[in-house]
Image (cartoon, rainbow, N blue to C red; front, side, top):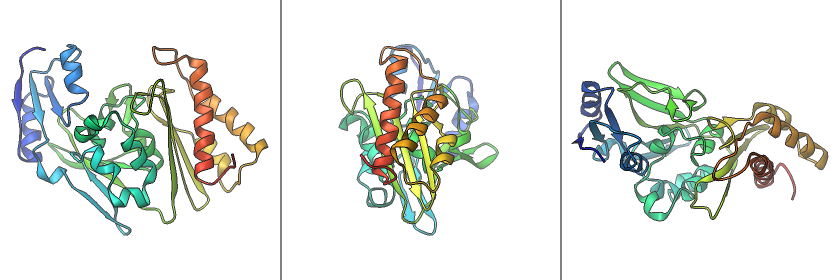
Length: 281
């Protein structure tokens, strides 16, 4: 690991100023579970590391049915997984947070960091997509809202500018929403996802998202349109599985083959639909 300047700002404004001074060679540290590994492997070699872990305003979760859920950028996944509001109203997100890595990792890792890494297999990305989350970002020119569907641009590429910081994630509240998160991995739940799927049902609307089968986590709009207002039968399920396969583009890698990923994607979509009450086992 090369030498670097370590900065720990006390405010978002100070953090943005530090990034702006060296935009090309500064990296944000939020939990650090990914950045530190990449630095040790010399994949990433920043001249300046800006640690936002000491900014108190980023460590809060707030919820009301009127205003929805706000998760500060520095809230740990461990705190999310057991927060009463998430467990009661956003179960698929609580379940995903509980399945990221080991307990030690969840104690320091954050949802904002997990999303900003923009990995195709980020566990919190598919719940964020079905819950229609909004990233709240602040930079030199002010604050802006980035819908999660517009946030992921490519593998490890997001819509953030180099001097922007995600302050938190906003998620709307839907009355009587039912969600599911399903994950398949090589060894056990704490391993990186081979495929992960989330589904959310509220009213007649159904949202479905899938990760690790394309350059970014994706929604499945044709599946969602087909599911709208339906109670899924065996004949429906055959068509849904065809739509799932048409929508994804998995690859062969060290974790899985393309063929197994297709099989797993179909299996996990079906499990999600069962869990949200749209299909029977």
